[in-house]
Image 1 (tube, helix red, strand yellow):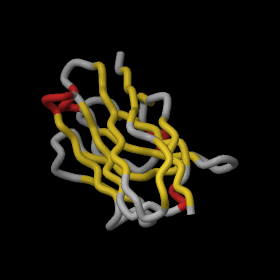
Image 2: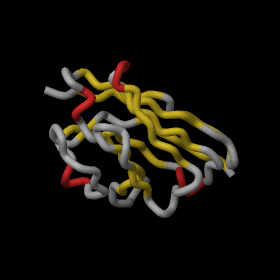
Image 3: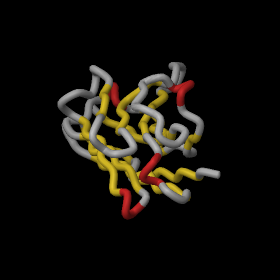
Image 4: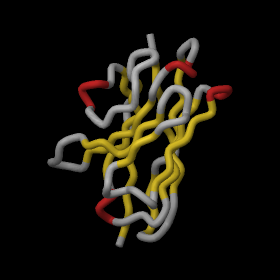
Length: 125
């Protein structure tokens, strides 16, 4: 069983930064590819970023490239999302997600088997 708990959300002004964390309660965290998704009110859940289980490969949505960085610390069972130059359109609930062991990076939410409860990010203009 994989449990994911996000933290670090909040209210920030446009142009500001936030770092989200996702702590995983699972053995062998290092073999899980992890991702971040977000969902704004009235919209579908969309891909933000993903990082491979080895941390050697990652992928980003075009809308966040150059502003967001995904990383992981396998010793702490944690994946991070550093968000810089935030825009009002980044406002959403952000979800951490995990794939089955040893799976490659994916931007498709249906490829992820494990989900956190989400953390709210609000960017004011």
